[in-house]
Length: 407
Ligand code: HEM
Ligand code: HEM
Image (cartoon, rainbow, N blue to C red; front, side):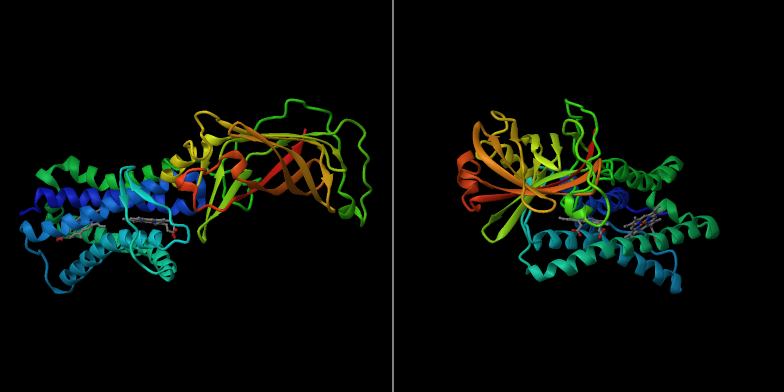
């Protein structure tokens, strides 16, 4: 039996396994948000590799003779059509992926395997939705064609027994006959296994999901049920007056601290994945509040390793010299039924300045949801004071959301 050339066989199985890996990772990307920025870069890098391998494969097809088709008739035509479809999938998936990142609102640079910058295709922004839809759909088209293709291969192997499968297996090796198709399944499983664990649902916040390190407050005090805030309680529940010291609140996993800043018409958004907060506060007596938030600046990410490297550098956070930012506030004031303002101090990059934050509480008793924001002026802290930050707006919006339980 005449075989495909070794190079064609190699490309056939390598591309097949890489595609399975891509689909496994791709399906998780949208849910990962900022936590998956390394996976985004990897997905794009491997995707572009598939494009290069496919182009090489098309070239090999014309350069190395292929075995003659074994079957004519409609079955032969179907096999041919499925092969053509598979080629379209192999080319279409990376091209639509490339198109969708080239037309996204926030243009995130791609460094292929951390080395080669991928230029953005000159396409209009209106191409983003169709490219994105086609990208997701093509994966399913590919899977359908793959099922037909494998069914055809198995039909030849087990029903017709014409040994067609050997045309794609080097050296008639029975081990490879099992190992090569199995590598496709393995690559899919690998793509699922490497995904980070899902963020706990309990405290999922509306902003980009960011993994959070929780830390129990140091000063655990007797828990007090504070009842509801006055307006909420209007209808029925009597407000329990605090009968002891203000409660300490343990921040639950799954919260987020995000930031965004305008940059010449577009917005750059990101978040911090490592931070801790120690909060002591009686919502009915906010003057009792004692708040300390520590942020690991090395965990800042805008979802792209290239820009994140710049964030850590001396024009932005200068992580090497100042690894953390600290916000502290003693006392907060009530500004509405459930809303508060805390005037405190922010220490960032060695500079301490007055900074206030606004937040609202929802929920009652010992479980509350906190969401809030702050506007931080960049200049006093020397954030983005170099050339790469010259297009940035002077103020950065910070927003946060988390659940907290009274200890
Ligand atoms: C080469 C084969 C590729 C395959 C099989 C593939 C497959 C997938 C799949 C199945 C998804 C999930 C889509 C969804 O759930 O709607 C996805 C998402 C994504 N892919 Fe790919 N991909 C490939 C190449 C690329 C390339 C080359 C890029 C960019 C250069 C790219 C960028 C993206 C992005 C940014 C997403 C996130 C979801 C979105 O915004 O729609 N992909 N990919
Ligand atoms: C278990 C999985 C697979 C098996 C057993 C398999 C088997 C084969 C065999 C035996 C051939 C040669 C057909 C012939 O000589 O007429 C072939 C050709 C081909 N396969 Fe696969 N394949 C698998 C997966 C895939 C995947 C995932 C893709 C692409 C996404 C793919 C794309 C192709 C293409 C395009 C050809 C035609 C090659 C040409 O003549 O240009 N295969 N495959």
